[in-house]
Image 1 (tube, helix red, strand yellow):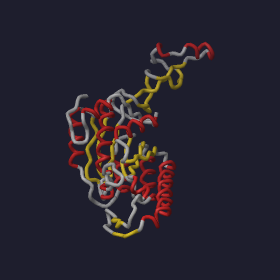
Image 2 (cartoon, one colour):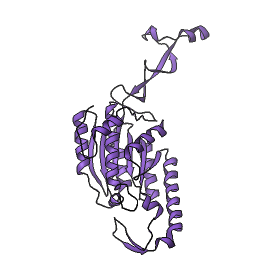
Image 3 (spheres, helix red, strand yellow):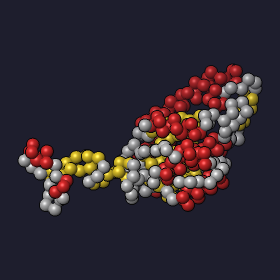
Image 4 (cartoon, helix red, strand yellow):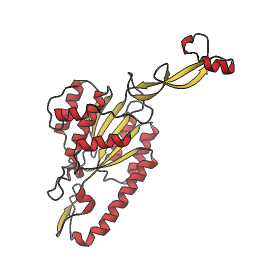
Amino acid sequence: MPVQRYQYFSPTDAARMGKLQLVARQVVEGVITGLHKSPHRGFSVEFSEHREYVPGDELRHLDWQAYARSDRYYIKLYEQETNLRACIVIDTSNSMRFGGSGKTGGTPKIDYARHLAACIAYILANQQDMVGLVAVDSQVRLELPGGSSPAHLDRLFRELEVLQAGDTTGLPQGLHQLAERLPRRSMLILISDLWTEPEQLSRALQHLRYRRHEALVIHLLDHAEMELPYDRQVTLEDLETKERIQIDPADLRDVYKQHVGGYLSLVRRVCSNCDMEYHTMSVQQPYDKAIIALINRRA
């Protein structure tokens, strides 16, 4: 699928992503034959189970070995493979503007998220899967329905170029809305820094699970917010509440790192308890290498 150069997706990205595949781990529903397990039974691809023969069944699907053992007629059933309905959700709350400081390098989380979303959308569309895009801060700001055509991908890339971060977080509420609106068994790919209440996040993920959606949670982190690497007094500002505090990093670093580590462990446990796939990703790592590493880990 040839592409022109976009701000967050280049021909070089297309060459690197063209041979990658992102496969759902759980059963999905779709409208065409593809890569993913379907809940529907058919007569192709991979053997699943038997059922008893009934008049009208095609004789070519009879299991003659089972007949020889039991003297009864059985039909072989197979798992169909199907295409995936995926939805990429980008957290556009104001905290996603953090990153790209001279101290640690990297890029602002919102820009990193846009690169990730573009690459993942290309991978999915390239394997004939339908992919949509949603942006959430205090509310759902953008909702682009799923598609896989070059025209759809062009629109998705251009929506990413105008996407901005700039309001307080309402991620759990947005996920609750999507849980009800997403079609059938969808795969939701969440790209966020997850600075939200873990209990609220847990309820939202449980809602997705109840609706039989699969979620892949990509947790964006910046080295500066993990390590507090400053060597002099600094003024820290909450990007969403605008609250400011002046600190001496040397006095707080050890306690701060303990608290951050505890929060990450809690978020990981929340995702695990909700049977959702969870991966951390540093914005200091090149996004193309990060995606390749993610897909290799999933494989």
